[in-house]
Length: 235
Length: 370
Image (tube, rainbow over all chains, first blue to last red; front, side, top):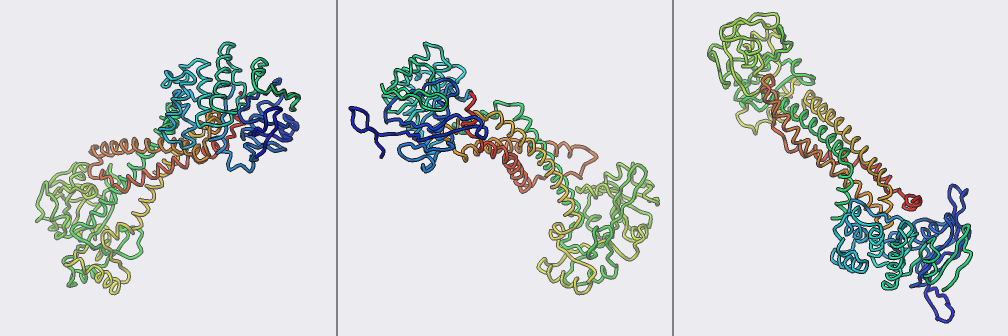
């Protein structure tokens, strides 16, 4: 197991690691990541900051196994992704995603949307519903279970997406501008909830954001520019 | 449950498109059921003519159509004399036309023939059959369309005949036909001393194999087949059956293309949704299962609607007086089963490309441009 020394706190486990990661699109004409090295420690909240197009989302996609780097290595829980037992297993049990748009299925109810990952993973119904009750209670959505997505506010939708991401108890949560499409007040509520849940659930949170204020409230702030990490500042 | 709802959601989201696909399959299935059932019925009726009070049919080997078959009278008489034979009835088939009626089937039979003896005589007396060379008996429907009754003179082909009876049978071909004494038919169709077939009733059905072997030995130019054997192997029946299934199959193929179109559109409009399912751990098999589930539902539902439509259509056909006796609406379970299976596989085949496309959707590409 790989370990990292955090000044004054002893040994901590690295759950996500990117080593010299390069990524480009359109046959190499658009270079997005240019040799990124990144680590996230278990239970840590990390903010990825930087201007649009700097590679925040691409790095999150690579860390979550949704895409493959041109060069370099990605490891989750110290197992390299190309040697990981399966990317499917990763998405089902180890990593949860939250996006800027809630990406919920509009024809389904809040409850049904949240249960999708449990259907994919084949979780038994009783366990899935117990987990659903637990998460909707934490996010204040208990009385909205039967509501269709169209009937929910923007904040409720994003909280639903958060519940869905945590349904299978992943230990890593990757959030790509999770408050980017919300108003200031709702953003604050959702962000607060995100941090709370990360602590409650013992989840490592890596969040891409433009909001410097929010970023500074994370354990670590990683500044990206032109496909590289320019500054990695521990809290 | 959610998996099923994902399938139903997609179908209900584009109701009109789904309904058009269901209608495509339904009409194909209805067409197939109608065509196959009508033709099977027709074949059954034609077989019925041959198997009337008999279990074996003797005809000329290697003829493509029974109308071209010649069984010499000498062979017929010899066969009738074999100890294992209860009775042997020669039948001569002929087709003529009259004014306004391009096809009239004529049956040259003897007075001992079951078709004459066992039919319901609406007019006339069977005892008078075969007394004069210009006498004919008409089937009920033939009497209707020839506008003839007992004692009338009717023009059939190049001859004029005297109607000595009108009989009713359950068989459409017989009901629309003209029965002539065998000798009259032989002269009329210039097939003296021969018949088209000889229908044979044996004293014991156990003798069927021996009878067939004996025919083969004594008359190498003839062939004897049991009724069901004949129905299975007669080339005209095989052609008809193949045509029915081929025409129905073409209809189903069109229905399948409709399903394919619907499923392609369904996948194209749900790329993002499929990407989200992938991010949430859906496997290729689960994604494909969803697409195949949709197409299977469309096909099965379409097949059921088609079966109802087809059955209704068949019963409507049966009610048309002109088709009376020609349409047999006995829907065989085997045909229904085959059609449902074909419809199901058509739907599955129609979803092959869309499912493959859906499995290739990369979540990251679908989600990159939020």
